[in-house]
Length: 98
Image (cartoon, rainbow, N blue to C red; front, side, top):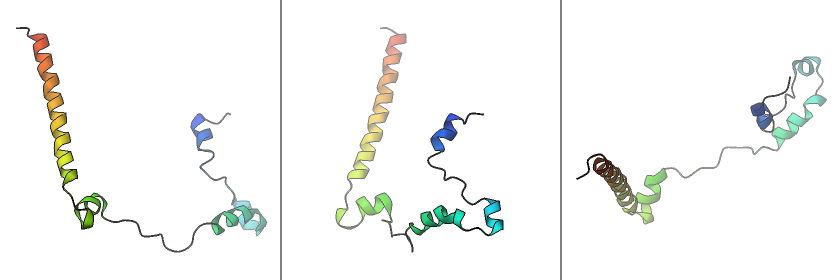
């Protein structure tokens, strides 16, 4: 049976099955050396602190405080509404010529 295309694509992402029940129950540890090697290279300790606050902290708090995102949002909504209204207006004239 051939592996599916999805399984072939995910083959590089999913680690191979290293720790089998027979290796674990028989007490042989040399079969687990790739797994131990992989985990020994991972960083230890807590994760680094990320920037908390998102858009509010980036644009509305601190030295970068500005109303530009709010104005851009209002302008974007106006532009979308105007585009929809214009398209509806064109459809009206297409179906009802004067």
